[in-house]
Image (cartoon, rainbow, N blue to C red):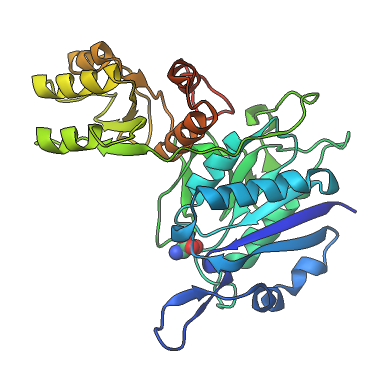
Amino acid sequence: MSKVLLISTGGTITMVRDKVSGALVPADMETFKAFMPELFEGSIHVDIQAFSPLLDSSDVNPDCWVRMAKMVYDHYDEYDGFVILHGTDTMSYSASALSFMLENLSKPVVFTGSQLPVGVLRSDAKENLLTAIEIAAAQDEEGNAIVPEVTIYFEDRLFRANRTTKRNAEHFSAFNSYNYPALAKAGVHITYQPHLVHYSDPNAPLRLHTSFDCNVAVLKLFPGIQQPVVRALLRTRGLKGVVLETFGAGNAPTDKWLYRELKSAVDKGIVIVNKTQCNTGSVEMGLYAVSLNLMKAGVLSGHDITTEALLTKMMLLFGENPEDTAKVRELLGKDLCGELTID
Ligand code: ASP
């Protein structure tokens, strides 16, 4: 019998309506289990470990990522796969973080949740969770996991975690992977796309990385952005890395002050990475003249990475290499576990 460890951190899937405020709040795992008897009736053995208290994902932070990743790491040999229940709001951040923390992963770690709580009649909770468990346990004829990656399963799609973004606060298809195709689609059958899966070296042991440095920021450009705003952010004490959200193929205003602010930040050792504000497509510095200044200032290309993946990758690289900015710059330009496409 396959064995899956279900790690519950909270999220809407575990929530009930508070009688006083009327707002949704995480309940407890006993209440949740009472709504999900199917968990223990199928052909897959499921054990549960839960955060206490359960969290709305707006309260999930890097310490929580470490707790989740350690739960996987500590029980790695006991289970065929892992499912992590998580609120949808920050799921793409947590799942991206775990994809970098669990190096050489050879078993599935599937994040899921729901848009409606498990106890609500039209809830998407059961389908999401039961299919995620099936995917976490899925193996080929040789007994190897079919999707040994950190993924997000939602509605009817399985995505590589570090390619996802929450795109919808209303519909059941809450996530999309704009720059990479789905790894599986679930209908009557689950159809996997093995040629799209990222496989680690099967002989390399699982390595856990847990040091984060949160001294990073996102700077979103807009027409009319003022120098004092940019200066204040780039001169923040202790700042190590910046995700610079640019226009189109990685373009920015050509104001001389912007070039000077960016260049002086890079010269001080701050790592700045160019990430397009477009969901689909890639940064291509040098395509337009309006990106040449960014290159001259020493801004790196983020290629087609998501903001969620870039931020969490940066935080982990700074945490793991505190004295080595050159190494951080080098690894930011590399594809570590399928998070970016280098043309
Ligand atoms: N606020 C909830 C959370 O992220 C939303 C959800 O789970 O869909 O925990």
